[in-house]
Amino acid sequence: MLGGKTVKVKIDRDLFDRLRKVADVAGYATTEEFVTHVLEKEMLHFEDAGSDDDIRDKLKGLGYIS
Amino acid sequence: MFEFFKRAFRRPQGEPIVIVSGLPRSGTSMLMKMLDAGGMQIMTDSERVADIDNPKGYFEYERVKDLEKESDKSYIREGRGKVLKVISFLIKDLPDDNDYRVIFMRRNLDEVLASQNKMIERLGTEDATAAEEAMKEAYRNDIVRTRLLCKNRPNFELIEVNYKRTIEDPAATARSVNAFVGGHLDEAAMRAAVDSSLYRNRSDG
Image (cartoon, rainbow over all chains, first blue to last red; front, side, top):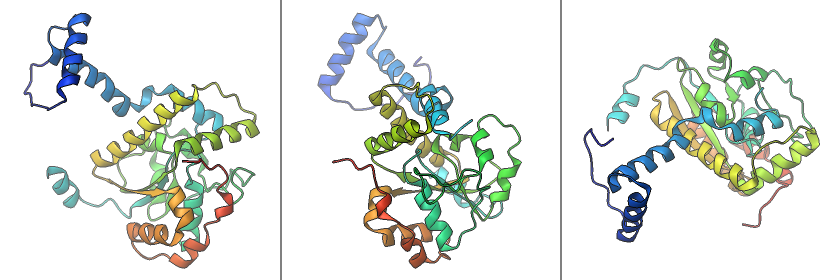
């Protein structure tokens, strides 16, 4: 997952400690792997509009899409 | 920096199509009315007629509702030099063979949802959608997606217009929108088109 080029991102120490604990309990190999997984999942909300059925249903009800 | 050069040196694809966008009930029809009054040609088939939810009309083009499904989108080209209303969810489906100037309406999400719920009640359509908080989150994502898309696609330019501020100061919106679309519109007529009595779903915040 971290095979490509990487960059450093600064985050709050307390948050990092919480992430490390969760990563450990959840079975991730490293905290970096956990953070990457969470960020990739979160990015999908913004990059993949096609999957948003909540909005699609609402817009149909309002008559804005068919 | 690369993005800047990509935009600056790209070949224009005819006159830009002005897109009025946003979430449903965010003030898109009000802005269409302003542009119409200001002298812009509207791409509409007038099929959806004025009703209690939009007493001054919707200014919609019915076929746009199928933008997500239709593969032939060449008709969008007819909108060059005109203004077309496209809700934010469908912006991603606009074809890339046109240049777009997107005027993105922003309104308090509580107000948007309250207005949508009233409209659904009146239309009598089934509202099988998510709970209020989940819907707000979905709309927040939709807003970010639209902003991202306009930033990433070189044929898109975006300006954001706040609904409440437009009601409070229509002259400021008329000025910024006119500058964005080329500066040839009648700003006095644009601000006169704003009817503050239609601001019915207000949030306390």
